[in-house]
Image 1: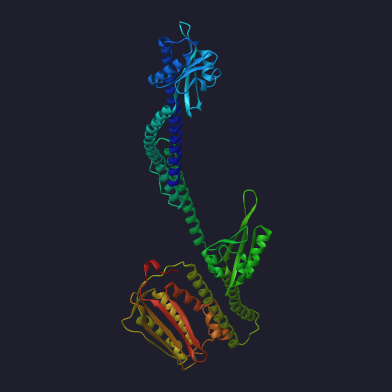
Image 2: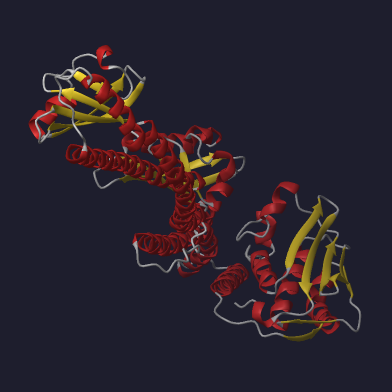
Length: 602
């Protein structure tokens, strides 16, 4: 803007300077012409005055030439002009500067010829005689007495006029220079006044270009510059509003993408990854900063995904498939490919949706296995009941003792069937969360005293030592009936899988932090132990380590699954440690206090 101000100032000064120079030249020319015109008029009056007052001598007299020469010299002193007397035929008879004999015929001089036509003739030309520009004024004169018939010519050097002109130029130049300086100052001020608002507008425009959309032009003018400032402010308002809409939309899109349960990958028409959300990053174990803007070929670690993307780009139509990837763990992904097109049907890119269905498929498999296991578990006692009942109904058993044995089997299998159905219903109720837990302070020593009293006869039959070491003062908050159910199941299993003469021991200690204290309860037995390969699955429904022994003991295969669900509803954890032939330890961690807002329910 400084350059524009200087340029504008120079332009204005140039225009003023040219105008002033043109005016000065014009004024000088007018002054010169006016001055010469005045000289002509003055010299013409002097000639007319001489015509009426001069004593003309007859031209035919011998002393005429000397007379007119002398008179010319006298008149030169009076008029301060060169005086020449010329006959009609152009012969010079007297001159104040030269003798008439030395001078040429003047008949064809410009001033003589114009004097013949206009009576007063004039001319300006260079005089070879005196070496200067001269003004010549001539007038035809005929004396009253007839002694003289010719021309009187006055001439004057224009050097004096030049001196006057130079003097005029000096004064006029000084005045013009002062005016020029004033004009330069005014031009600078005018240029500054014009460019200063433009500088403000430029600064605001630069701030807007740096995304400072709250910048505004502070101008209150009604001219075009004011209109420009208002237009800039209007543009900034519009940009600010549009930016707010864009940011709101971006934040909304980012929020949607960040909180989606599925992964999103957007691939542009060039085959580069334009966008991916956090779920996609987690599924593929990549960072958006690492692969965004790069070719989709960087997905080669996820080979099945890469092939699916290539197929979607090639076919440019909706695709849906389930594929298994290993990166490094096995995952089952439901993949959807949606091609994107512009309004003119030109291909814009591909949108890929990734949904991790590993857990869903695992649950479906578990559900299928559960149905199969339930069917199998129900079929076994029903088949036994039906078989023995049919035998009895057919009358094929005459022995009362055998008949009683068959009826006992029918009764036992019915009891087993009843327990199985009861456990299935119990597990269903726990998983569907149809009844809330009722929390209350539980005195752990009393709880385990009652449980040991209830299971004492079963332990005594196998000569198993069943003891607990629970401090007298120890309380925890929980649902007492559900806690009893947990420990009865665990202790029943411990007694069932411990050989005669073994030991079952219950230990308890307070763990955790002062802000969140926990109770760790450990149930140790000296039983047969659990193989290492079976440890991760023992809490699954109907999973049995020793199926024959479990069935012979009357177990349903659902006890540990029920225990795990009840422990988790108490916001606790359960794990198992075991060695074959040495026994097992079930370790439970339960919070001493339950937070109402976080308490589980069944």
